[in-house]
Every structure is written in structure tokens, then in C-alpha cells.
Amino acid sequence: MMDQKMKMEVPAQVREFAETSVDQAEKAMSSFMESASKSVAMVPGPMTDVAKQALAITETNLKASFEHARKLMNAEDIDE
Image (tube, rainbow, N blue to C red; front, side, top):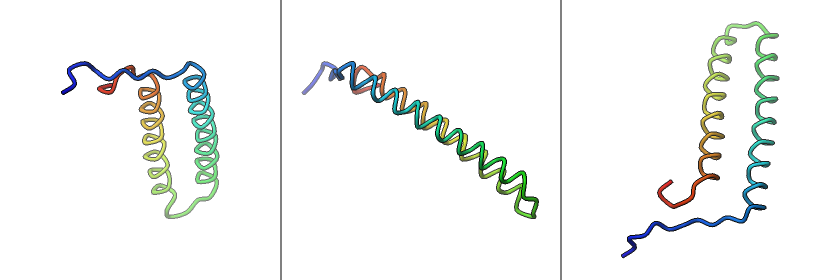
């Protein structure tokens, strides 16, 4: 039985690499979403509103994913 919390010790270099990787991925996805939004806006059609809604939902999910990744990187024990 383990009463103490399991401590997660991650070397500083690994943590920095992970943070840099998440930042780069977020910037890349942000750029992609911006381009996709511009493309949808340029091509009028019956599905434009649906495409805009899908992009908005996708963007919300991506933001939540990156926020979660950052929380995981900063976790100090298994409960976090």
C-alpha cells in the first residue's frame, strides 16, 4: 500500500524540450487553423457555415489539448 504520493522527477532538459515541442506544435496548428479559416471564407457555398462551425469546434478542442499537455508537463505527482 502506498500512502505517499509518487513523485515524478523529470530532468530540466526533458521538461524544456517538451515545453518547446508543445509551443511549436501549438504555433503550427494555429497557423494551419488560420489558413483553413481563410480558405473557408474565400469559397462561398452551402456548406460554408458548417465548415466554419467545424473549424471553431476543432480550434476549441486543440486549445484544450494544449492546455492539458501543459498541465501534464507541470505535474509534480501522479494525482496531478
